[in-house]
Amino acid sequence: MSLIVETSCYLPDEAATLAFAATLATELIPPCSIALHGPLGAGKTTFVRGVLRTLGVSGAIKSPTYALVETYDTPLGPLHHFDAYRIQNQVDFESRGGMEYFAETSIRMIEWPERVAEFLAFDAHVYLLTEGEGRRVIVSGKAVV
Image 1 (tube, rainbow, N blue to C red):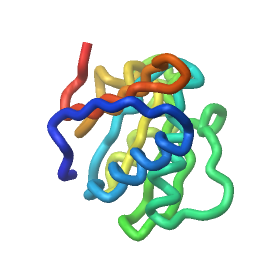
Image 2 (tube, rainbow, N blue to C red; image 1 turned 120 degrees about the vertical axis):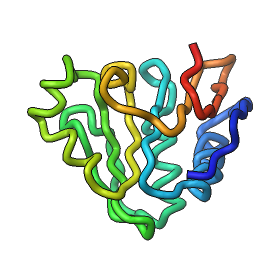
Image 3 (spheres, helix red, strand yellow; image 1 turned 135 degrees about the vertical axis):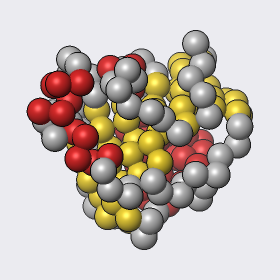
């Protein structure tokens, strides 16, 4: 993945979030794993939707909250959108088949990455933080504390 080392910008609305996600989508080179940080309602799934739309995915794009992962076919190969909120530990993740998605050349975008950070490595971190009426996005090649 070719990625800006670190960038930060204010996104005033959903349209700006989708546009920023579209920019990131043009930089994706599989295999890569992207950690999506942010509180509930920060726009993580909206961000993934922006990436997927840019990669030509049409139809419903839903949060993988209950399924653990939703997979989409893209011109770059599979994109797996994970929600790790309910993952308890590595054994739990493995027993749900989570590691199988990391054995192939694919793009993995993981919400709630702190739940799996002890056993998964990430190529980039996207932070979506509420700021005023919008949100601030920070993209980094390393975890920001």
